[in-house]
Image (cartoon, rainbow, N blue to C red; front, side, top):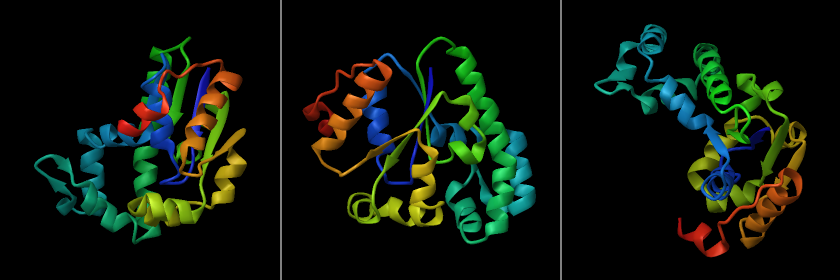
Length: 196
């Protein structure tokens, strides 16, 4: 089974990943990490530097902060970046899914729909949170969430929606979902979830 987990930045996807992936036998594919790995591809680095300027390259490859300064201030530049990187990310995720065929896999990220992975997932779980909760609990993520598509759009994408109230109830909702919807039991308890 392939389960997509999506939601706006700061909604609680990373916590969900910790609960599910560190405490179960499931395979987790984090789209942020896949995107970072894609940026290590030299051909992609060359294409990006040709499009956005050589100054986005440094000794380690692509300077993500410099690239972000460009694309998050110019919708056309963001569209170009996505056109370059999303197909590569899609291929990388599909390769990981194929390698783990027969296992329960979670594809976790805000851009499941944008990358074109919705049809690869048997179910989509949306982690929902209101603006106040995101701003209070993840201030750095709040600015990113404001540049993403609407909260309602993410809610509509999900077959299942879990609301993060940023309290112990969120862990209980995740564990309930895993046990009742996907027959997966998490061994991570409240104390361990908070410590990690």
